[in-house]
Length: 322
Length: 70
Image (cartoon, rainbow over all chains, first blue to last red; front, top):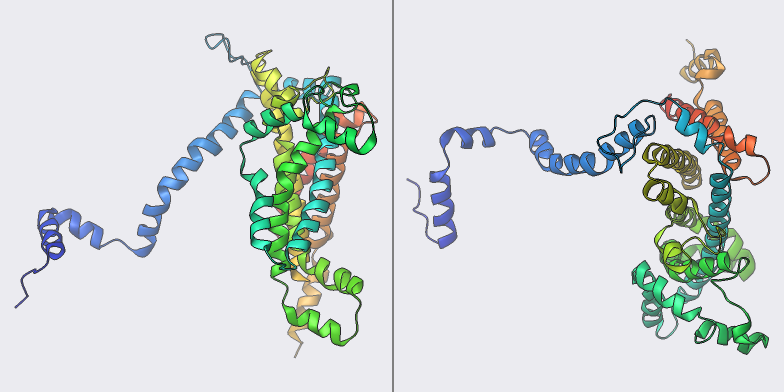
């Protein structure tokens, strides 16, 4: 004889079990682990297909057409590879690619140097290191829109703090140069802001790498009388290398797509000196309304980043196997 | 009886160059790297024009050869 349900929970479970039609109950009870796993994964896969894969396939399709998003009722014709030909023969887009490369190279280099140096210092575990870690991480937590706006104020030649700090150290009058208005300084203004914002992120990844190095390796090196310099180059750097490479990969991919900060700080100007690929893409797509052509441009950027990520993952696996 | 290690070595030797994962992956990597540099270099527009073909060839090759056995 079975016991009658005593607690409220048991009673409600019993009521639910009675309310469930027998056929459904049997069907659910009969599901295999694999089927249940699929049941849980299906919504995620459906969402991924709907918001990631479908737009990608649609963009590939559009890149072979003359579709214009401002003329939805116009007849869409296939143009073959003409959009790709135009993008790959356009000197303006070529210059935008060079601007992007310049921007990506310097931001990654500076972020790696500063991020690793910060991680190395924080790893010393001095008094209050937890507090300073939090303080250093603040820029990373801010929205790019907020960062872009307040750096525009900081770069103001009349009232901006940045010009006064530069003036304090160099003696150059603060109103004699304009970071965002100068052709030579504007790209560096964006590089400074991006480095300021994302070096903490690199620091966080490098810190994880440094903390994963066991102390006994350093102790063994001490016993062998290895100098601090030798320990750094023979233990710290090789063991933290997979983490550094991961940081480069993440920041590299992210900086290729850089849009918001550049748009808020300079809008691509002065002239087109800071017009990175994503800004040119936006102009092609939503100002010239060349949707097919901009799709081709987007696919080219995608192939570049995808190819690079492949090489990178291969290199990362090699480093990890060592 | 033949040593299994020798057999594996012999089988590997017999496999043609274009079916070996290691060298083909290296070729794909060189193609991708060359395509990438061509896309972002500031010297010659013609190199930029053919960068996508190079990148695409490298990426497709990489995807295919990475499925080959070690």
